[in-house]
Image 1 (spheres, helix red, strand yellow):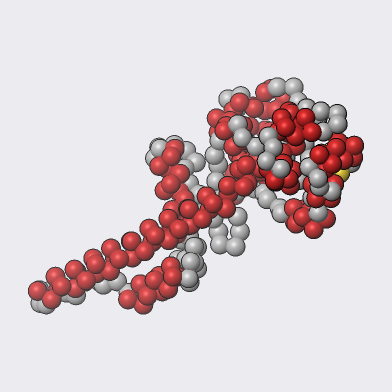
Image 2 (tube, helix red, strand yellow):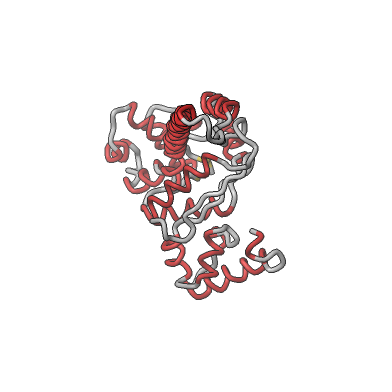
Length: 272
């Protein structure tokens, strides 16, 4: 069976100026509209050769034009994400009732927005710090007999300015204290969404590694009930949802707890 590209199918159909219903009518076997819709959304990428041939013929395209090219397949296989992020992707799909492909497609746009907002906030706070430093210096000039206050390190401010100009999201070129300004920005944004008193409203992102966060607790609870450890196992990625057993909440909760214990029994939860 071939591997269809939903995007290629959409582009070929739109090139003809057709709706999904019109494409269905144009195929010899009148391929069901729901089937075409699933294929375009990436819900069912493997397709029988006969079906592929009908679609390609109706669209005046070759079967290869509608399929993932070998290079594209290899590129997809190179993408690796952690189980926590994979679980979050599935839970986001469950919460908002859209496909994972749609979430992935918008991810670069959302990252761009967050990154630019983070850099803008850093620039604003840098100017505020410079203004406060200048005001403090002016105030001291009026009282030179008093001890000189500790002023801001101008070299540090210059490094921060250069870091922002170079789009250094993690501030690696700005300071050596280990704080990640982008993670701090994301944590603030998450607290704004969840509320300041909600647990888990924090993002950790060690430079060079992956972000650590826990969201969609309500959606995880739909899968395992009110079992706190089972929910935690899903949110932190200890229990991969792609391996979730069937049978309802009880067996899923037992499985998630066992996966959590197997992963953290020795290290302890605090070492995660």
